[in-house]
Image (cartoon, rainbow, N blue to C red; front, top):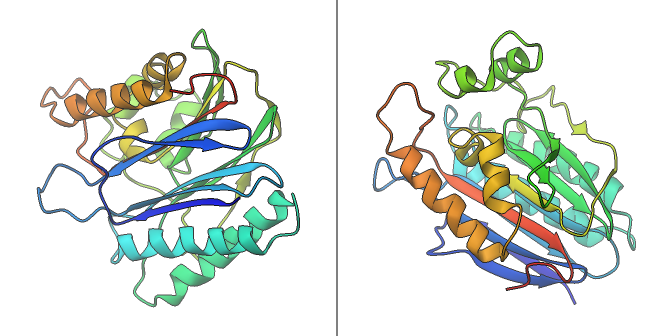
Length: 271
């Protein structure tokens, strides 16, 4: 069985759930609420052919470049095709091939388009992240402990990592949207994380910056750490919608496309 679910430049009316070979997942994507006729520039992928690790991916077309929706769709399609061509269970090479193919495809659009791409490779008891840009991967335990948070390829994120500014200031920083590494750039850099243990009650989150720029990392963890995944996804959507309507300059809040995939191992949160 192959589960290959691709949503591109579309909106989902609610969270969609998936029963996978060694876990459960749910996904959501919709365009920014402002303006009301905005096209969704995010795309996502859930891939599972039962021969190896599950692959979850989010691509977010760069808003400052033309053709964002086309770029994210091309990147996800290239990744999916690389996975489908891969030898049994050899996901790591296929994912890297997918990034390279995605970069060629986006550059080949010839319009200066670009997109982020974040991928989680999920084995039966481990997870590994791959990313370019400011879409990312977060893993939290049942008690809300953050076990993995990828570092966005952005000056503000680097400043937080270096201790120059804190997360609160970063979320309202004027340069929050500046990203310096994207699929579609000739000098694309693919950041690969190490394998990390995935415990029975851990939750994997792969999401666009529509989630991470509106909710603090610990807020994301608190919503997804336990309970049915569909309910967790609904809580993220509701909280992000509230933040996107924020007018208080001291609170995070940025209207944007919102996309995420949540995952847990089999036997946990299956409703």
